[in-house]
Image 1 (cartoon, one colour):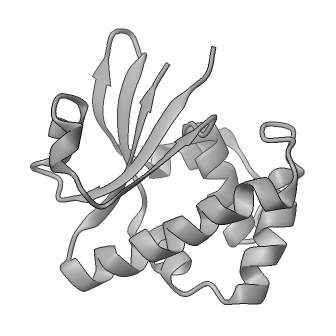
Image 2 (cartoon, helix red, strand yellow; image 1 turned 135 degrees about the horizontal axis):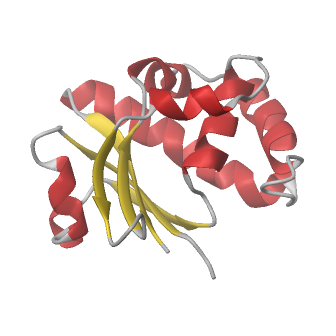
Length: 138
């Protein structure tokens, strides 16, 4: 079963509405196979820290429906700021590290476009005073 993932911009009050009305949220990037675990792995790699289960608590859950089959999590402000500030050489390093995790196990070139898209969303979040969210559906 594949996990659907959409990263999108919103504010906390409106963010849970993405599940019912995704078409209203124009600033978004769609992906597959990225859940909170994979995202938290990226966050720990960005900070050059080892992953632990407590890192999942840094992503507040705004929506949990159907026993976790549909979820919305907010990305930490520091992660969004870190994505916004990534330099090109850091993107390549992160793509290599993240793709080599057991959870992703893919080629760096397969995941680099997502990192670059997240960077753009993070910049736009800053410019428009919004936050970045992850919607998942199993």
